[in-house]
Figure: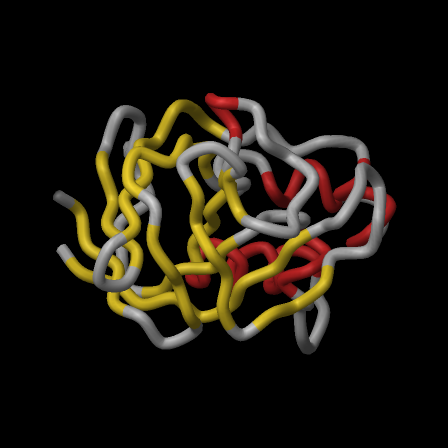
Amino acid sequence: MAGKIEWIGIRPERRAEVKSVADVRVDINDGLVGDHVTQDHRQVTIISKEDLEQVRQTIGTETIDPADARRNIVISGMDFTDLNGAKIRLGDEAVIEVTGYCHPCQRMDENFGEGGREAMAHKAGWTAKVLISGDASIGDRVELM
């Protein structure tokens, strides 16, 4: 099953505004270069574009800014139902391993309005660690391995 990278965001520090970028270095030691999270099990967060669209419909807005979901990479065209333990290639080289579900936090109510956290339930994406370093860019192919 293949998908595509639709959006990439990094946060230079905790609670900082998410900065949208066209490409990023995915590093086995540093996670996404420029992002503040480097914990082994949570170096990268991914979310489905289709799930974000469902969240948009639930909260009743015309558009949804991926930065408000506070995840690193938005991917289209992949089934996000149960990715726990899956290995995913981003672009030509980078490989991540999904380590768990990314639970929606109180920030979702702050960013999307009251009910945002509830709207994100079961659609909040996944955490992952980097297995193989490489570069990832918007438009790159994403593949389950």
